[in-house]
Image 1: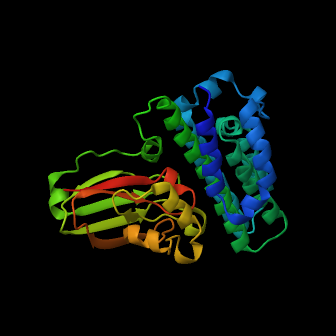
Image 2: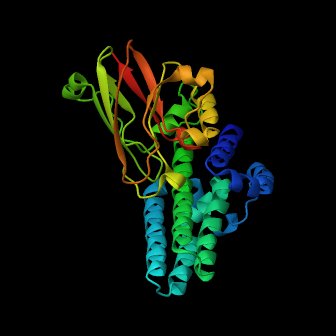
Image 3: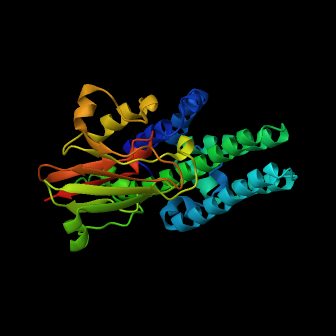
Length: 321
C-alpha cells in the first residue's frame, strides 16, 4: 500500500501542527527534504526495513504500541535514576538501542518521516541533559518531550493505517474516520446514560479519546466528565474537550486553536467563538474535570481536542435528540 499524494500531504500537515514553534523552525529544512523523499520513495533507512513490515504496517499496530510503552518506561527509569543521583549512562545506551531496533522507527522513516526527527531529537536531548548535569526539572522536561514525540509518532502511524484502509472509498469522511481510529466506538449508549444526559470521556498519551459518539437529549443539561488518563504534562500532551456547533468546519477551527496558546488553545476570533458551545480546561496526565452545558436544539455536535495537531485523531460527535 503506497500513500497517495493527498495522504502524504496530510501526514506533513499533521506532523507540522503536532510540534512546537521552536521545533517547526528547526524542521523547516527537513520538511523540504521530507517532501522530496515522500514523492520519490527514496527514504533513508528504507533498505533496512523489511518489505513485509512496510507493506503491512497496519498489522503491527499492537507491536508498535508495546515498543513505545517499553521506550517510555526506559525514559522514566532514566529520569528517576538521574533524580536519585544514580549513573544513567547504561540506561541511556539501552534507550538508544531500543529506538534503533524498533519496528516503529523503521515505519516512521518510510511512512511518516516528519515524526522521526522529533523522536531522535528528544532522545538525544535527554542524553545531553543528563550528561551536562542539568537541573532535575530540565531532565524531567526532556523526558516528557521524548515520550510525547514517541506517542505522537504512534498516533500518526495509527491515523495513516486508517487512511489506507479506507483509501478509495469516496463516500467516507477520512478526517472523521482518522479521529475514530483505535477508539471504542459506541453507536448507542445505554438508555440510562441518555436519561441522565451524562458523558464520561477519557483521553490518553497516544492521542485518543476512548469514545467518539454519545447520544443525549436536547434542551436538558448535559454533564461531561473528562479525564486525562495519561502521564505526560499538559505542556507536552495536553488534552481538552471542545464542543462545537453543528456544521462547524473542523480543520479551520483546529488551525485557529493552534495559534491560541495564551488562551489554552481556545480561539478568540468572533467566528470561532460563535462555534464553541462548551469546553473543558486543558488537562495534563492524571487530571480530571466536569462541566455542564445544554444543547438547546437537536443535531450532531462535534467535539475535539484543540491542542495543536491533536484534532486529526481526537474528535467525535454528541448527537442531541
